[in-house]
Image (cartoon, rainbow, N blue to C red; front, side, top):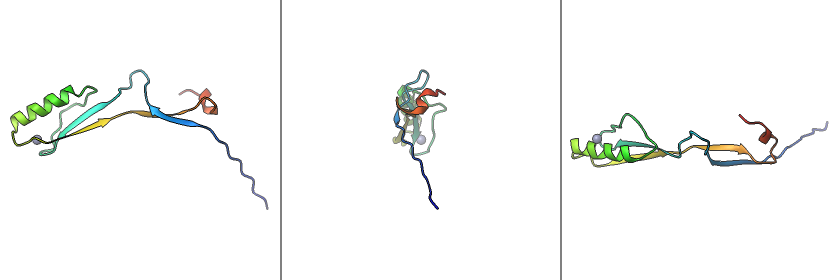
Length: 88
Ligand SMILES: [Zn+2]
């Protein structure tokens, strides 16, 4: 009994998602003493800096913060990939 296999090869790329409306980065911050976080994240680190300074102003012994960044990426078909014809 013979088994026949067919393999196809298609190129895919992985790159930052630069579509309109997709933020480049989102910042999240958390106090490492009490784990409090501001209500909202932002795509500009300024509100996180202001929140950290205010937080330490209200709690002088809370001086450590964890700043996390979130970025958005996509896997998309390369030009010769048959899926390149299909757009979501
Ligand atoms: Zn705190």
